Length: 172
Image (cartoon, rainbow, N blue to C red; front, side, top):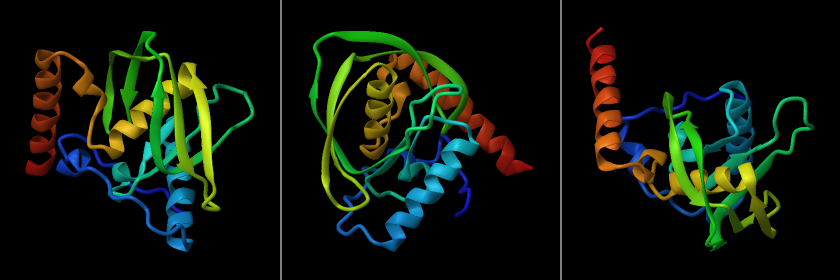
């Protein structure tokens, strides 16, 4: 169990389409354990493996809030198989784009199919925050960031800001 560093924009790996997991083994289970530890420490409600530098189709989610009992969900090779036509705009942020929030329009409800850590196929009908987190994290494993749902002008400004910040850090 270890907290892994979270990569941030403009890291090019964030734009890579992650590879499917062929076999759920001890390495996959260790990755998931580390991802939950990293996600809770951040703190966040979702994390894709690519965000910790592992371009595999692995996602961890816990969309509970405050004092609610934790509900950790590990998804291997998740795939959104249905989305509602109804959409909702809500503020989103991302651990790989720290301290930036903006309104994103997404389907209100989704159905996601994935493998659990035992390799069993599961389906979840998600709405509310869980639906939003599922969509956000599945986007990550497809090389898509939440800023890609914004206008080109906003997206370009965010990318420029984080690229400048990265250059400043590299120069130190």
